[in-house]
Image (cartoon, rainbow, N blue to C red; front, side, top):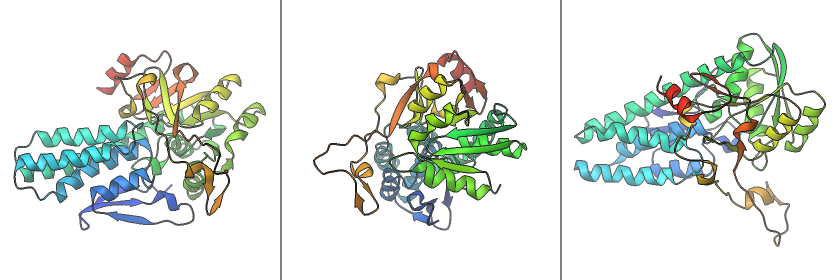
Length: 346
């Protein structure tokens, strides 16, 4: 399997290059991004998406802000960076990794006393976060592969692959590592309405790697669980609090069905996705635009007079989760945040 990057710093460009994900699978295009405003728009439009990838994007965004600032004093320089960081932070409220990546680079910069050193530190830290993310995904994959039978069909939802990370992936990293270990893995990819990240992105990634994948509509998942087709469910996460896993809308439905049919439900996520400060009730679930539900291509499928709800995420209670796969190993119930935080520091 050829490993590819989702977004990276281009020194000659003096900015960020990334795969424009809204055009896949019909068109593979990379975008040159040289302003924080353009990066914020890319995140809002889901040209860049996926919790770990957003962490990397946030980190590179602060480095880009530092690169572009024309401030002549340290005070005005840091003010510029904070404004740009706040803009990036506001683009996606539910996924915790975006703010995590931003804050980690800001913390590194704050220890510098001059503009050149702070600018250099910002890019160094962003590059380190990107490298760590790749290593983290491989570790998640290796740990998670041990949970899958030698021959199995795995159901996944949305896209938690290389496109959602710097490379390799979390949920798809588990599948890739299992295949690399010579396991015979087939994948059922839920299409993931309304933006079809499973059909467009997960199926594209796995097909390119030669991993057998079949796309199903979201409403077919329970049928295939009941008929014995599914051996395990593996999903990613955008935020994990002590009492819930936040992931793409539809995840909770799969967790309920998996529990009813005694199918293991695994969450693959880096420790940076854990939120120790909040519980489910404290987390804002992003509500996206009406047009994502009402239209497809040039056609409109919902009457103008009909109301639409479009939450981007849902919350799955922890008692439906069989295990959480992290870079430091597999966490099983009971999920105690203090113990997870201890693992985070190892």
